[in-house]
Length: 320
Image 1 (tube, rainbow, N blue to C red):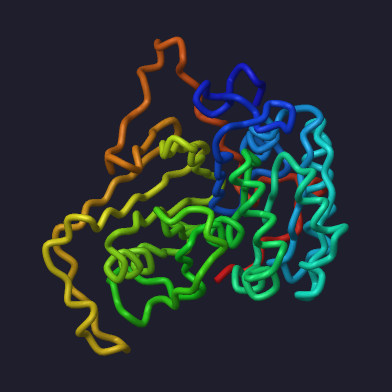
Image 2 (spheres, rainbow, N blue to C red):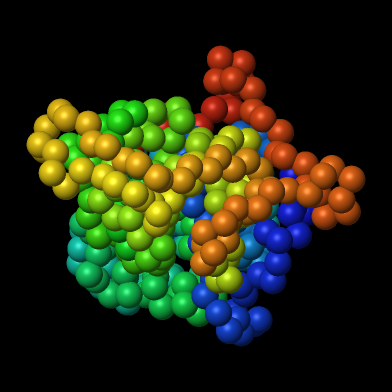
């Protein structure tokens, strides 16, 4: 996708070091299975928000069980857009104290977490100087992005693991602390594709002050420092708002099996170019196509069956 097709709201001031940003950087959470072989619009957006050509991207494949495959793949993609990309290897907690690895984060204009298992990220990085460096960089204006497990982990409250379901049940999920870059959201990914609405209903029923955000594959949200959330990509983003819950008995139901009641919850389904005001808890919709700021939706990818095998990426892992 060319720069002129990027939504004006999403391609605003880059968080380069020279710009001396006065606010936090944007958070970009991707629902997983983003296009890596075609237009690669979402990954291009990460580079654009990090400063475009010359952006410095620090890649964390920490969540992945195949980091030696995933890291070179993302390095190649980001470099194809003119960015400098290098991997920060954190294989054990002591790596998260290494001054050279910490310097990689300090020099970056974007930090990118790959998919895998979000528990690996917080187990290896949580509570270390590296976690502090990531939060400090974000407060200084650096973009922090993550796909799949890397999207879930940016939150203060994280779904660490769970089961696909429709009804809210206490047994659906296990919650754990994430990296704490936003206290407003709890994010789930591969949302429609892995039937995870019951997980998100459960998370919101147990934590009504949070906005539950379920992101489909090849779809992203951009959370701006102004607390405006933009949707970008081919799928949908489901927002579950529990602020006005009238009644739930999830705290009283048995741990296993029994579904919980959840009355008065609000559910919004957003598509490309829709926005959501986090402070007001209110969605807005895109302008009509004739509006000068209108951005076409990124092209849908061909199905996996039709994709060219020669250009295929490593298979997606089973994120929790």
